[in-house]
Image 1 (cartoon, rainbow, N blue to C red):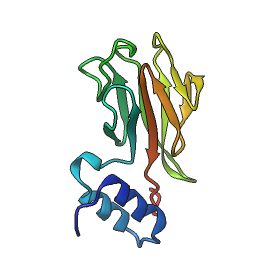
Image 2: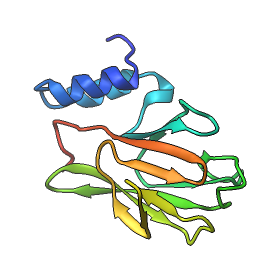
Image 3: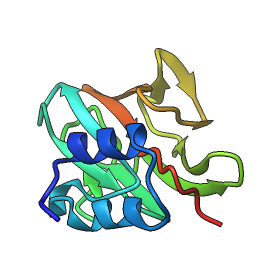
Length: 143
């Protein structure tokens, strides 16, 4: 199978009626920078067009070097927010964003949050960074 970009893999998985296992196969052949159950895409601010895949578990966002998603700008706290994957029996993998009592807060769709379940195309503001959350919608939900 050929390599897919995240947009191509996402479109294929969302729109196709895939047999069991094929969604995983498409993800396995996606370009290494595009693998994940979801993505954060920087649409404005420093590092515009940056793409950050999200996998199972917890992803730390901030300006510190130990963050999995490093957003280097003084408007971002060292440990600003986390994204945590959860499995929902109804919809499969989901992500919850939690603000870590950051100095400037975290906004989702223009509203300040402490913790919120993310949906595809949610708009996130962290400091001077504007990001869009993209959810990979698997036809074959995890069991």
